[in-house]
Length: 119
Image (cartoon, rainbow, N blue to C red; front, side):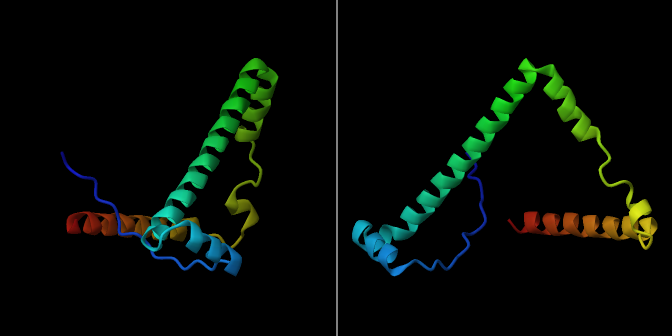
């Protein structure tokens, strides 16, 4: 079984208020504090993700029970709120934008291929 490769962890500097740092030092042994904080942050972020998913599911259920709301949502999704960039930015050069965008996309793909070949 092939093990998934992950990028190396990023080091961050946390500044804790003195009282919090003291409580952390009393509650968690020295060589376990990093893991404790990583687990705590991960748990909170997953909880936030779960709350967002639950909110989306609740809204979907409401829209299914009330088709008029679903229609209103679709109107918002279909709305052209700003108009074409050609209309509101007279300096916009679409040809230059498309060319530079293609160059940037090609560079991203090349970088991804290089990173993949190094693994």
